[in-house]
Amino acid sequence: MNAKLLSLSKNEDFKSILVGEKISNKYLAIFFKKLSGKSNKYLNISFVVQKKLGNAVKRNKIKRRLRNIMNQILKISKLNLNYSYLIITKKNIISADFADIKEVTFNDFKKIK
Image 1 (cartoon, rainbow, N blue to C red):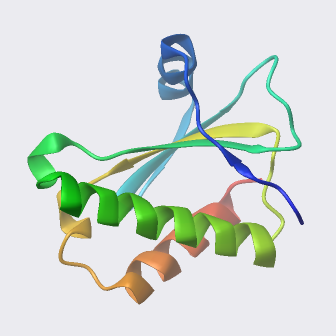
Image 2: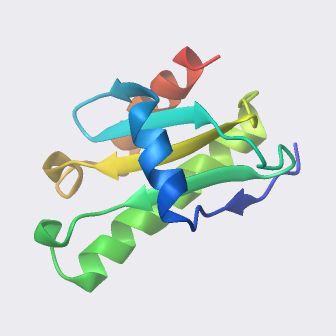
């Protein structure tokens, strides 16, 4: 699959996704919902890392890791591109190993159909 990651930009999109379905684990919470007017050629996804998790370097590292995981999920598995996703991180993700985050995230995205 040759889909690109596309970030959500409108405040209304964020609010409507937060009302949608949710899957949570010890590292992050995944909100997803079908949004009207969004293209299914791209993966509409945004990552939210709170300021209290660390300075800009730490927050950007977390976002880079999550983007890398999402690109791997796109290549390996069939991900539903009709949904728009919002990933909100939790405090445990800072000290977690990349392989653990990847495994847990893969399992959560397998549950979404």
